[in-house]
Length: 350
Image (cartoon, rainbow, N blue to C red; front, side):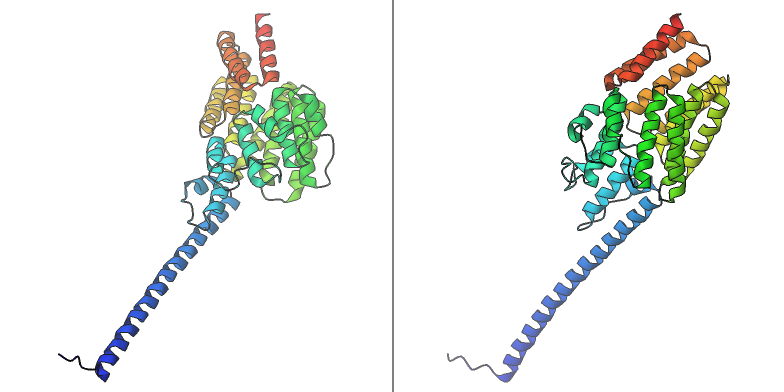
């Protein structure tokens, strides 16, 4: 049987079929691209929302939100790391950092990730790891202050003083240096020196107009409360403690700051003989600390509870709490606090 030639209609049908197939393929590509564009726009929108929340200080909301999809997931994860650090969720910050392309383990470029890793390790009380990570001669700036803070915690005052010896031209960097030096002086009983240094730092923060400076002003007020309390001036300490707690209201999720503030308020109340108020403030401090992941903060609250008991005259409870606080600080390697607490035990025996 002889096959006939294709007629014009058959060829036309073939061309139409080909055109339909091409159109369908093009439509599929357009749909896929549209979906990808939509997803990218949606992911960018999520990232922008995360940025806005972080700038506004709503760090818990940053942590609660889903990560944006690629290609914005990495930046979104970095924002979550920052928010975790600023709310005292230090182990969460490390866990998130381990998922980042820059996990902060290299300090060659002193990246933001490296700084966040060092802060997290410090907040977890892993002082030896911070020391190994940064060495004893880190570059000027935040890394040097972090290393100095670590030295202060373990009692290496000579290294801390050396690291903080050189002034900075930048007012905020200089305020950070003076605040650390003031904290060191107050801890070691050089109260007038510490008070002067912290007041200078607080004035610089207050006049800077920088984002987040209100929190630094508030934390300086808490240092001043500690100095006044150590000087036996609880009424003045109360004024500074209240100012510090009030100043932290701009960052309601700053759990470490509030825990410290209410711990100081508990000490002040005890020094003034207000046992109910001291207990209330101590409970508030513990409530805020429970939102964190910070063994040093937990150890400090044990110390606070012990000293509150001392000031309220409950020496039997105080001795038990002091031993608990000694154990907690000893596990961290916080030698100055351990020595201070042993001295307090000796004082109670006398």
